[in-house]
Amino acid sequence: MTSQELFENIRRKKSFLCVGLDSDIGRIPGFLLDKEDPVFEFNKRIVDATAPFTIAYKPNVAFYESRGTTGWASLEKTAEYIRNNCHDIILIADAKRGDIGNTSMMYAKAFFEGRSFDAVTVAPYMGEDSVTPFLSYEGRWVILLALTSNKGADDFQYLADSGIKLFESVLLKSSKWGSIENMMYVVGATRAEMLGDIRKIIPDHFLLIPGVGAQGGSLEEVVEYGMNSRCGLLVNSSRGIIFADSTTRFDRVAAEKAEELQQQMESHLYNRGLLQ
Amino acid sequence: MTSQELFENIRRKKSFLCVGLDSDIGRIPGFLLDKEDPVFEFNKRIVDATAPFTIAYKPNVAFYESRGTTGWASLEKTAEYIRNNCHDIILIADAKRGDIGNTSMMYAKAFFEGRSFDAVTVAPYMGEDSVTPFLSYEGRWVILLALTSNKGADDFQYLADSGIKLFESVLLKSSKWGSIENMMYVVGATRAEMLGDIRKIIPDHFLLIPGVGAQGGSLEEVVEYGMNSRCGLLVNSSRGIIFADSTTRFDRVAAEKAEELQQQMESHLYNRGLLQ
Image 1: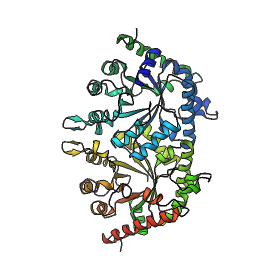
Image 2: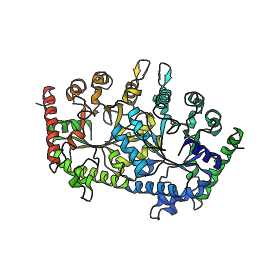
Image 3: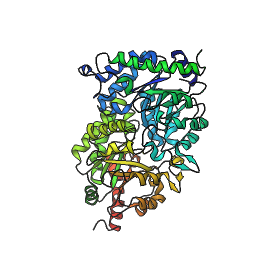
Image 4: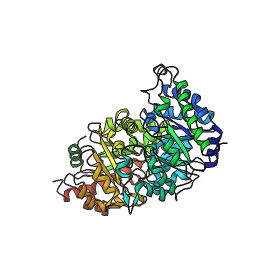
């Protein structure tokens, strides 16, 4: 998917919502547990219900990996289901991978060849040769951690060398490894006050913004400081949508929560002149 | 496993060798490919042949994950085989994981509950709450990336805030999150010149040292600058051992390569007075 196709999807669906599939088997509705693959069944119903309001799905790989081969089977079925049933979706593996070159190449293979994800989140600590193997796949994306939403972001990401903070160095250097057609960045909604500075470094890249909802980030601030002329934002909500209800109506309630966010996003897109 | 048990294993086996199971199905001997699970069969033979010279095995998760559920099944069988057949081995998942707290907890569950690894490699970029979930398992270890062996280590790991380099900040802060009983650090053998400075910050921790062999690091330098009074080193070799031969004798040749390293390590342990 190109950045222009992504922007066109955003305009057509009037949404820049990414739904995070952090599908913890300990939290899905109990009545699903006697299905053959409860997590896949849960994801399928969530996707069917929320797809009209969504431009991206983001399975959080840890929640599948925690269950070994069984969990990986659920992840593979989920990816295949989304691929076959949603033609205007960017499918993100939230995996936070990254290793020496020959090993990152194997991770890229895992998500881009074996399973047909469009994008994978990558950690920057190991530098260029840990990231570039993911960039060798035409039409696929690296979403590199820049400034994360959690408290631990304060430990290292703000350390400054010659006045340039670590997350700023990550943006400055890594934006030369790829282009706006194959790199995005993770910036937590809880760090919205930094989005203005970040946009000075990377005005045109898309950003994946977690932390709206359960983690306390504000959509208004994210839009105010982070939106650009092609939207440039994928705002993720996970628990606030997928676990909003635990009855047999969980998928309908998830759709309502997704639509609430979509409606707010639609207003912001109109206000910024990106919809007419 | 405690650090003292690890040191006792090192003395009994006169070795601080970790064998990396980067078991790429594209590189294993062709005659194994008609086995039901070629990668597991390869690992089993490598383990049977090299165990006398080895104190740690380190499956590189990427090489399994690249093959999806099939690969994860090989990984699970390998871990179980090592667990059941090698009683003096520390089993390391080389996974470079790390995410927000509730997600790192799922990764910890994947490796410490679902599969019985003793240790997992973790990336530090997201800070304390991305690491501590792994530390809640008694007797298990986090092996945190500090200074890696690859070229990309130069991109961010040497950036200095107030004269303290990023990898030094990682050591200084993270060593307070756990103890010498549940944290080790990755320091590349190709960065041996920094080991002296690193030992000033963390004199007593065990270090996992990749990069000897295919990546060009020197065992002599690693020992000179990195060894402490309880050895404090796990030196990894992957490709140089497991892919040294591609005939039906691959396991015997792997054992010879492992024994060569073990013999060098034995000399170093004697010279340092850690064996009598």
